[in-house]
Length: 382
Image (cartoon, rainbow, N blue to C red; front, top):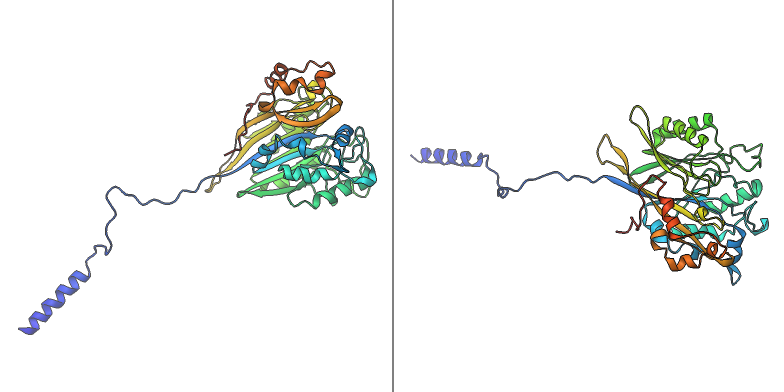
């Protein structure tokens, strides 16, 4: 009888120990367990046009024995520093005192400007423009040596070793950069370093673009091109833009005309798109005509999805108009976003005292021909 009892007890123990019910409480009704969804990767990007330092800027910012150019950029600094990456076309070399400071036609800007640009928030510095050889090979070498000492900078368009392609990785997005200029004001490149500055050559460009394209998510080409002071791109610009679009360039950043030109999206038959800013106009300069004191900061966002096949897109495209303000005698040069520029400031502009028809209506009328979204606030402030 005892044996039967123990056998029954054993069977009961085995039965309940094998019960498939969980040993932890069930989830509350209506509560679902889901996988974490990763957000897309993004890079906010801003680009400025021609930073062109005339001798009047150099002379008027020499105070107490030093050149301090930081006041020029104080009103645009928050835009540039709050973007993830910022580009500038540095139109003038910074070769040092031994070459003599000078403005037009052969420029050389004090080297303190380099640190100011870094502190203002610029990351990508383009050197491929028609003034790159103004102080010869040695002047450009001295400029490149200076820029190489600034950790924040990636320099494009000119390198001692002649290598032009650069890749910048930010927020898990790889941005490839190339840069070219139409010419060097007739100054030849060194025979033993013919690739010191990247010059427009379609055969060479095709090779470099095709080599860089598989290595990056977005391919950006900076181009110094077009006729000076033309309000619309010329045939050479539109033809070259089409050529770059056919070679799968994502973004073209244009400069050199010193005035603003339109923005265009080039769409190929297969649906691929290339965004082209034909000219961003002047950034800091002391040019004297009213079309040349209104430039623009290009803004946009690169996006890459977090999951394969990693969809890529460019969005939030637009331009922040920027006024170069200076007073009579080119004193107190300063950049203002148009949304901060006032009638009171306009009354003191040096062009007004010189009899120019510079008006607020004119500044706003320029925006109407640009074919892009005009941004009248800082889009990068959280």
